[in-house]
Image (cartoon, rainbow, N blue to C red; front, side, top):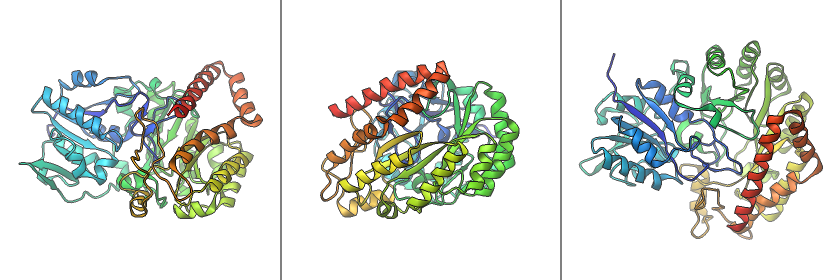
Length: 475
């Protein structure tokens, strides 16, 4: 049995309510306080004996809290992102000042595509894990020489060295479950997503996405476009284990970029989940056929998180969405017929956007009339095709940033005839136009009247949402 450095995995504090590991589209503070599970850190933590995972944002842990915890560790792995790199580098400096011999590494989408930029953020950063960093972190914790670890960039004698790439993981069944790390290190009551039942648990059953969407962060930076997944049997075993660990959980969410990428597998997993008697939800593209939808619904599926993005076909083609508007409409009709709830996501400011295409998207969303929506701004993160296009075409506005000083999204891109201030303003107009209608209000009130806990939650979310809109308007 090899010996391992005592390793601390940290999702660091930043802006209050900021979720650095959120989804494929962006890392930002959302309209209501919401947090996804730190699965990307939990997986390497599960590979390193004696490790600990600290997810600071949902647990309201401060920089001082992290410094205190880190005193008992020999190595720290920090999950970073484009908006938080400066603050994460400052945390690394404080950690190194406290313990000069501490080994500090950074991982995440930004580190994966800009390892040199990440290392140069501070001399306190010893190494960076590129692409899929699970076994890279394990190798570092095991004490292997840095120059022999694939997928690693590191600093030595003032020089930055980039080791060869590491192969993507294909034997997904061999990865240990993250559920034991969740149980050991996280307070699951702290995690809340408005459209999911509370408490919930989310994790991945596979990585990568075969779709080619130009804006999507994780497939272009860490996970790749080949969908590599656990077998249905392995998923069933893990979910049976999770059900035992977390009897209070009301819903499990599969956060794979596209859980339904291979529909026969989705149907087989659903049949296993049906036997377990759990309620579950997942990400899906708007092209899942009726048979698969029905099989999933019959076996405990409650909700689908669907990226519609735009109501303009030309924009969908520009971003390589691979979905036709009518196809998405039929999918939505099928879900409604089967009683499957949809949380739909839309993005404003994608290439080809005009005031008319935005109005078309708002009307399209109202026609789809799904249970709830999220409206985001196009986020050109480094490593994405959208970022490359923005640089080449001069779409970045002057002094453009990805998030504001409070951690909320900003409009970074603008086009001829459409300034970023206009795109930013349309988010609030979109929300108001969608939700301030009789049917959405009636749906929300109905859920409140059937469950007192839901009523309290919805009232809190309503206050947070209106506060979010006021803060956006105030700049």
